[in-house]
Image (cartoon, helix red, strand yellow):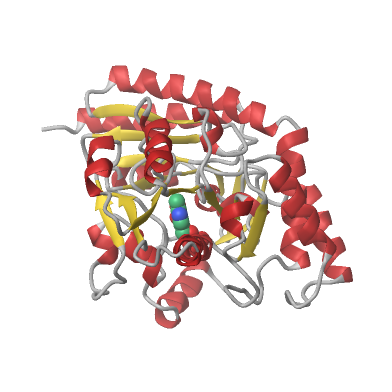
Length: 401
Ligand code: PLP
């Protein structure tokens, strides 16, 4: 079928939830993608910060194929080895003692929200159920995570939302302090906001939240669905800030594109979940777990985190060159290979221009160009994108009235 026929059919048959870029992607390798017309693209989206190790990764393909030939799924009524190997690998490399596996970021956050409530119920503090979250945050599209999400445009049309979330401005410790009541049980946030426009925490902010949680007896929940699994140059973004949460959620890059989420917690907190408290039919199947085991080992032992830090630094430097050159470039933000270029104008024409020139990039909040390429990307690919952006920005300057 031709691309235009596929797109016409999709627009007729699929739920109208997405406004898609008009290309049909058929295959990929590393940081490259190919469409049905044979055009190639350098991928700076990576399935929205998912394919950290790039497309068609040999090691992952092998791990998945090998596992698929042996055992795909049996449910969590039984023990399976890949799941336990993954649990051990994750726990060895973070603050947590236990992990619950699910299938997506929203599900991981649902688990975290339920765990926080249950923890205080078990401690005879049933009045504590409210969670403080941040403006411009994004935690998912299920009813609880929607209520936790601090963006009116995402919540619009779904009232009444689940009660129990108090939204305060990001990077404002005082606002959090003022929002705490005897009903508050937790503070939940992304260490670096992704969908909110790649917003980094101010110096001392996350440490301040940790201290506040300790002094007020609250749980600190980090949503590392987007920032986790090496995206910022460390396995988990909070490692940059010298502090730890009580609960952390992961998804996106965990299995390099196979659907998988995880909620990790310290022993004392994790124990609030008992048999029957929570469950997921597909959570942590042998198949996705085998992929994720390969992801974690590759990130840790094949120089991927180092590459992410090095190339990320280079990328930001090159973008700063554009910031100096063009007055409509407001700011370069981010860590590792989670990078935002804040414009004073709409970024959508830039996304379209990049597409025409063979680069996939993405835009959040209408004016922040977001770059979340595979973590294996190299400087020469960055140079090509910078040349493309430079040419587009020069055209935009020429066309200004
Ligand atoms: N949390 C964060 C920080 C995210 O960026 C996302 C997705 O973009 C989610 C949660 C929701 O993840 P999912 O789409 O897998 O449910």
